[in-house]
Image (cartoon, rainbow, N blue to C red; front, top):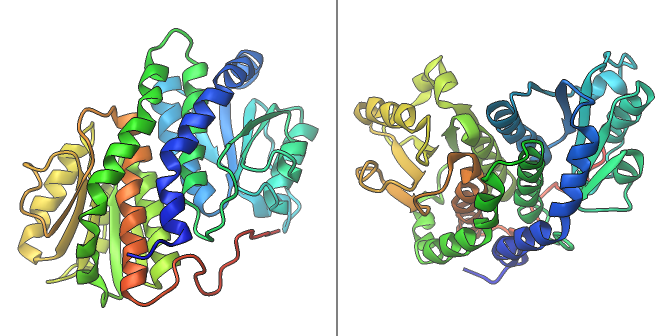
Length: 346
């Protein structure tokens, strides 16, 4: 493995989360107090990696705050000039650069309609940050590699902080505080396994499957595989996969399954057992090695982590797998072909 910029940034994530928690916990508590009784549901505008963070928020705010979360359709605000009515919404924009005009347009329109708005971004002086009523800066430092890693997990952590702050008196913030050390342990354990990624250097397609909180993780890992390796990687929930896409599975078909312990782990295990007869190549990310002992490539994460925080950890094996697979295929993981660090869409 080369000492690429992306490798360095993946390993910076524990420090980034630690800095975010130390710098913004008090500020996020204040934001939560100001907005708590001013909205009934949440709308999130995001693209790419940030959109995957928004998927996490759908489960996070749904399970812990009993809030419905909708993903915005930015083209309604820009291309079609027909923004929907947003009365009762807290509108959140998530963007690592804060530059994309369509995301900014959603927050600008929300403010025009009198909704509270919040920006989650790594650029505190960006147009998105300047447009929003409230800001949670990510404290990730400059992200030089094109593929986002530390801004993704810090976005998840920012959303987790907000969820905790909207539920005062809960003990979840203490659990969140343990994430950096768990990240460190996870990365240390994974590094020595990544040479096995070369086994998959010739694959041209795969599916990535998760459910619940880790539905977002399936999307983010699939995105990293596509960005870094040029492999067609399709994300699914385990439920949706059964509704048709399972027909694509045959002997040797690569499947990446994100299956940490939690409310949906039994469903993921049932899917794996149901697939065994088709003889796919199964790569499993889990904290339960005994349960998933028969798979082709097991990527461990520490046990005992609350399910709602597992996406901050379970994405790490996917990031490293995509990085190592890119290098095995002779590709530059820091500069994937056709991509730019800041993508502005309208």
